[in-house]
Length: 233
Image: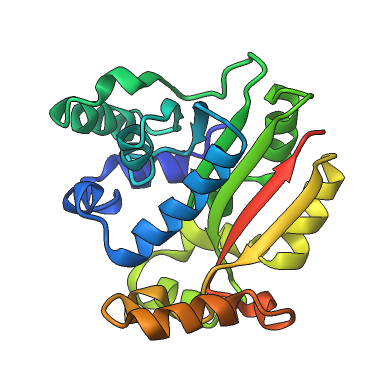
């Protein structure tokens, strides 16, 4: 199922992730990437399918950490930009392939950032479960939380609700319900910051407090972002 509105939106270069930030990510993005890569290392995962890779916001750091990537995105323009970026950094050998669909083989891990709130969860969570290894498959995603007041304001002022409207389903209870519906196990949804993370990039002490508050029970429901982990076994 291809969302034409999404495809047309990401054909436009200004709607893709800032190319400069691919290679110079801000502190909060580095922390986000480090958290996900730590999970992959702990599970001894060396190859991932990245769902919704775009032009490389998460792909480039994965490749730089010697994790092989099969990049999946509905936007051919984004995949082309990703291949060019990886080639320019001479890390393209880790980019195993680019495709508009999740490969059929039993994958160890499917990962992504800022993508689940762009797709129909009922379509893609079921597909992911089918295409993961049944013995040790895992999904790991980082997503915004609609119940954090920052996101509705940000989308209203700077983006486009016609592209972002599925963020309405990106909240703790709905995500857990959908993951359970599609037979994922050992579900862990962690809050990642309570207040907007960019505010604390130069304030490491307050940044640490912000991360702590974002994962406190109850407060977690209103976290700035979620790190979502679920297994097939």
